[in-house]
Length: 380
Image (tube, rainbow, N blue to C red; front, side, top):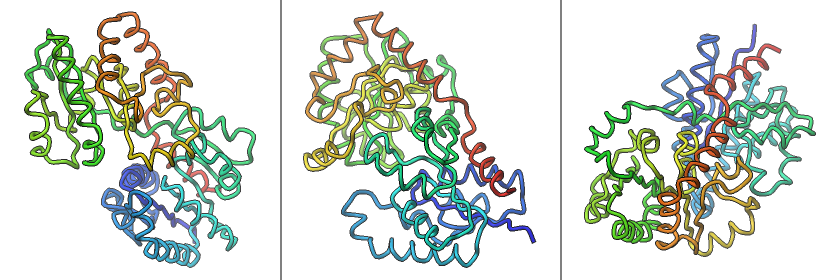
């Protein structure tokens, strides 16, 4: 009887979303596939059978992981035991790099015949580049989401594929510009500056004082500016209202994040996914990030990239300004914003560079391409 069992493991909420897209594509091609492992509600909607739930593993930060170390070991042991018992033809591991490399290594030690595919390459270009030795020994196939990652593995014996960035499949524009302006009661004669301060309360709290001071200073200098802030789904409207109402900053739900980025003149955003969103929408941005001193000291020792934002990392040069740690001040934020507003050539050049980054990312359909890789190995 043909082996149609696939194990998928996604240890984070973002991985659960990526996994759901892959499962959907897999079952379109073959509805008789059986898929189980670690996943969340999004994967389960697609017919996934969980051994553990992603929500049980969503720990953030060193101390949280340390506190749950015994549970993590329990999950690891149970997954290894279950996979060895079921002998699936394919094991697909999504992101969650540290956990998954350990899981894959344990499976390899048992000489498992399953082909192990990794979706989202560990960021060896950012830190601990020596991990490449373990990666090429442990995984049979690597599905990368950044255009330069395939080049890293070109001299190594591993099936490395660039599938495109899954963020491209998330682009959702509900309103044309005029409709969006009407919806938010935006004065079309003013310049629109949108703010993406972070998706968690602690991130917002680290950035908010600087942002509010910069907004106040910019309003004193220019009367043609309107400010909008994207509200994360993780924070209540009331929390935002208390902070931003006094400065007359309009709160916009994250449901409309793509429109807000697309139709803004400038985006002020925390380093992370939103920085790549600005490149996809070709909107000039200013990237910022602040950590506590201890975390920053550790990060400086580990991270080897020259830049912190994906558009600059992909471009391999500084195309949008970055304000990190002590450089993240209200004065610097104001200076960089005014540079965009007052220098049209600089502003237009930035758009041109962002277009190059957006074009290099590729096309939509990352989940479908990963599913195709899985099905290819399944048929061998």
